[in-house]
Image (cartoon, rainbow, N blue to C red):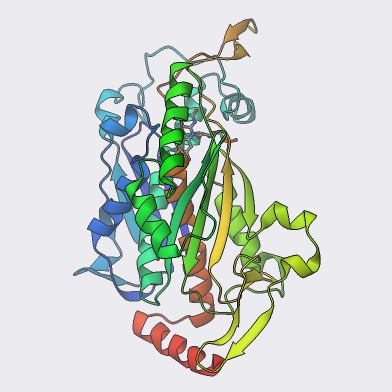
Length: 382
Ligand SMILES: Cc1cc2nc3c(=O)[nH]c(=O)nc-3n(C[C@H](O)[C@H](O)[C@H](O)COP(=O)(O)O)c2cc1C
């Protein structure tokens, strides 16, 4: 089984990630990890921090000569901004900086200080910050490489920002990728792309923030990943958990999602067909590629709703932790809209879950062993 841990504060020295359970013999080019890290930092609506941080991964262990060894893979992503925060974030010496005492509504600020018995919100916000997701994207990049060895790829598209909804019905998957890559907000609908950027500019001028919706699409998945036999083995549940754990994610829809609830069964279920060349297949994909918590061979399609970001340049009302007086919430340097970045994180965390499900089903300690197992299964399916 694959598992990972991340560590690191937003303005600390570095982010750290350990990936355990990866098989041996997988060629990993660090440039591919850096490419994903760069994608996470892009997107119209990001703030100044992203201009400072140009993330680059350092591989500390678990690889030799460009290939994985089967041992834990340790990664580090240094925070470039650390040099300006050394005294504030020193792990040993107390900081002389003033404490942050005005919690921002919508962040972990208030619940965090109460839960962990803190009197400085910085002790909460540094770890609660979405900076941590850079470590998850680095892990996801490695699992993406594993999936690509089996012809599985995963892409994403932004389909809504604020009230602007894209028209993406009927687009082919290749087209989605090409057009989304071309867009500053990762949206394949050219007109929506323009309107979304305007919406972001408007929110920025007002000192406000925006949310939206992105969709991830994985193709090339075999029938049979995940299981219905126990709740914690259902792949739909695992993917939903992974995607909901993205900061500011507030909803996950698989396939038709909430829309299925208002339709008739005959309009929703995907009828089953068979051809010798293709095997079992469907002509529709309302299930989003999952039935009974198991992949059904159709593309996996999951939408994620993101709330508008919590830190407002025109801050909302709050209460000072010490004086208990009504105040305006703290203003930290902040993004206006991160839906394009969240889509990249979505790809990463979903890749991790899919790679884990592939390893569970086809196992093996080396890539060559897993490939033998996979080839045998594909033969059996036909
Ligand atoms: C890539 C990314 C960047 C983010 N940047 C910010 C930010 O600059 N300002 C902010 O207020 N929230 C930002 N967030 C959202 C907060 O991290 C999140 O809302 C907060 O941790 C509270 O968690 P919750 O919204 O899931 O309850 C970002 C989220 C993501 C995914």
